Length: 528
Image (tube, rainbow, N blue to C red):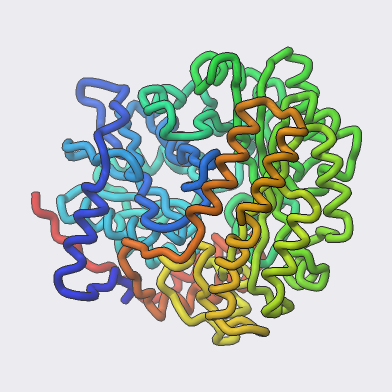
């Protein structure tokens, strides 16, 4: 049975205390009063390395803010709690909702178990429970799979009526159903200025046009692009400008879309709407590098305020990109980066090591190439067979996965046996790449280039500190997170789910749970 591992007898209690009390102060007040039921929405602590620790990448958890707005619509009082900085409120809520990424599953399950021991019902949601609903139900009273907007009102009604249980499967609705920024931005207004950088975030689209084998996005949000109307986005930007984070006249927003370039017509329409509005802002987004293939579009997004793009290059090898079903063309990278730089748009690149075509020299080759084409910051990671993906199906089916401790699925641990190097070579190569790319000489040359680009001082300072943080933080480290042992029966179901077409992954996961003669849950005895 999947469970948080006991380890040494004295350690679990110490770890649990660290998760529940190693924080600063309560944060986020209920907005309804009187007899309104109380909902706690909790972000588990990271307890390990991650891009979120890097300056300029500390964003509030959008999923919980959206859920808070949905709950308010139903008359619930909401406390939004980020355990990376907040203390758990002392009150006993009527319901707890926890958003779970795979790497956070051990902490989330431990937290859920603690609430249930105190007699508080728990609902889990997010990517990981969507792929492993049976596992999640061992630690919760109910699980939401997929997008929550279509089912969360029913979850709350059932919780209020004492009948919440089982799986609530969401659907892929249009973006019009997603709460708008004015419904949740007040939850962040009491946060210290530098808790979240950036604090101003929006999501304008969901879904992705790619079908990369290693990615779970289209399994959760679907293929293609659903988007808000550009004029509606502009109105949300106005709200953030009035009520959000600002540094003097400088106003910056990060779009949390999985790929703002998934629909280039929408990208252009949004940029035109921003230019038309007269809003002065800086913005960043994740976008495929194909956006830079259109010179006119690059000029337009620059006029609209684009200052930074995070793009998943993934590899400098075309053979590797074909392997993972990625459409990029490495021989064009340099030209595309230069075009963005010519319009004062910085490029942060994502690169993955451990594909079957990767050999032991890939780390140094990548660092040299990425530095030569002028990438402004680079996030290096290890290929991770995330639950629900084709990469998981292939590696699990071939018996190559050596760890099912979900806490190690953080993009920085080698949890599988590589094809052309050892696990140790893959792990050590990752840290060498960070040391090489963020060595003092290369950082100095990047700084000089950024000075020459005449960036806005806030943008220039941010990219400099980002480089410093990557170089300082990304190295071998010790984690305080609890260990987890996945249940073999859950893994059998997960293999089927991961092998299914992306659009059917969630439905398959729910069907696999229903087909099992029983979905046993570890009993959690209430103490009140």
